[in-house]
Image (cartoon, rainbow, N blue to C red; front, side, top):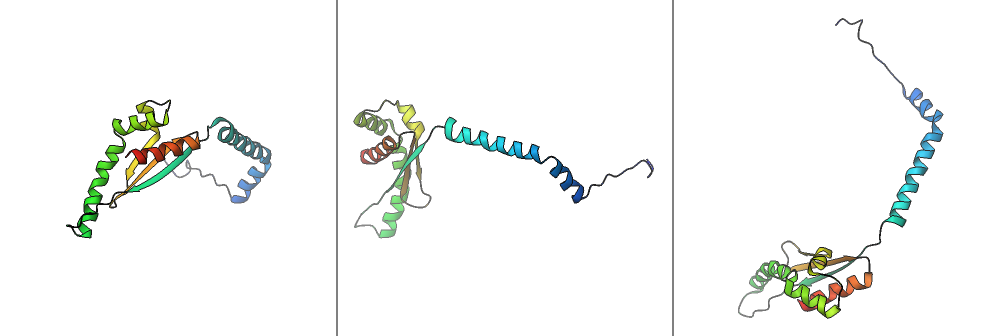
Length: 145
């Protein structure tokens, strides 16, 4: 390949802006169409979802142990209580006491339970399209635990 065969194409910013300005109507129509589709999807097609959140703290109060030992023990218990909240025993009690039309698996799917790392705190959140029901399920789960 010799140097005569290689060609370069250059475009400066002025030419680029001129090309874009000449097609302003396509850019405007595309932008309006994209925002319209996003609006329709967000406000008409998507179902509203509400999240009810609550936190619990696991505290061990043992006079024989130091406060640091009680705190460490409380931290270790958060994993146990997190698993307890997901248990069929707790789930069944919540469903029965609130007369829910949900199965165990459906309730477990909308329930998110996590322990906050290195603390004795457990966070519980329920996500539903009914804000009031989400709140009642979250509060009742804490009461049952």
